[in-house]
Length: 292
Image (cartoon, rainbow, N blue to C red; front, top):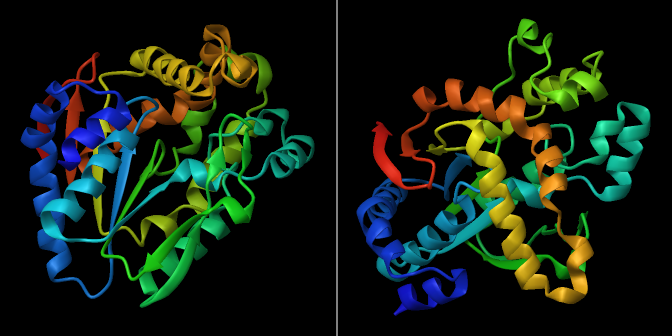
């Protein structure tokens, strides 16, 4: 059964399937229903903070939709559309040093993202190639290592930590939200640029999304623990010969401060605007479903 292969691949116990059947299978059925009346592939946007389970959910939905509904799915992550390290280094010199760190709006190649989405949404046949980002190397994979997709596809599952988030009011940018902003962005240049990227670059992406789903964390306080768990899994996957390519707890604590402002903003501004919101507790257990 595909479910057992899924559990082995993600190193999950059988309990995950109970949760998935209760919460995720109905989502898959709903997506299949919406696709049946669509004239092009259905694009689902999935928002959730770091470590909330977006990637695992997307993989489960993709396999469920294929196995149970006969639909061809492609999975995308906003993370795969980061600017290259060279491009971010240039941005850090020309705009602000904090842009050397991937993550926030302004560090994505939105033109590449829009081009990829357009090709996936419109192609009737042939080969398509989807960019992939190597987090261990902190750089985009070369094109010859991108994922090959055979068109047409039925459903695109697109996840990202800040997907769907709109720009903040200008007044909200004045006060720093953490030590990183206070000490390294005292003039607000970095967060102002991030906000402008949200306001100008992302709306064309959002306009392509047919339905929205959010995994809503209880607070930003959970993010460090969840993000550290991700890093621990990366370390296990890379093995002892690549320890320097994963972050220490101290590095994780600094890293997530880049995400704090927009994560907190998303938690208060996004739930009422999505089609489905799965409310999580501190252990990522789903408490309830809200939305349409």
